[in-house]
Length: 148
Image 1 (cartoon, rainbow, N blue to C red):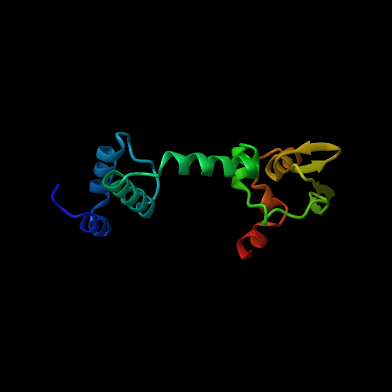
Image 2 (cartoon, rainbow, N blue to C red; image 1 turned 90 degrees about the vertical axis):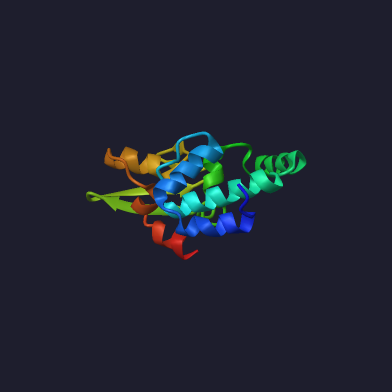
């Protein structure tokens, strides 16, 4: 392709979604994920630049991985929860469900309910209700997370 990289990147905005998916197959050698158009555009733009100019240096990748290990010990679940959005250790969350009051305590490693440790609020909400719930929504923290 003789197009310049900036021209290829600009063209992504006006390319049809089926054509974006075809480009994905060419550049990634895999089927495109079922995500929205904006995601496809951003990942394709990164990939085009990566192939043209090179990706991250191996030293940079190692450094980023080491920093991630320091933050979360390699636990991908922990990586998804921003520390500044998690309630402070010792906080007590109270939720009334079908006339019964439930008390959950925030711990350094997760949460505690009825003397048992849990990694997520969703697991506690599931144990209380018997159905799948987003724990942040169940305990009324979802709007607080969005505002922060």
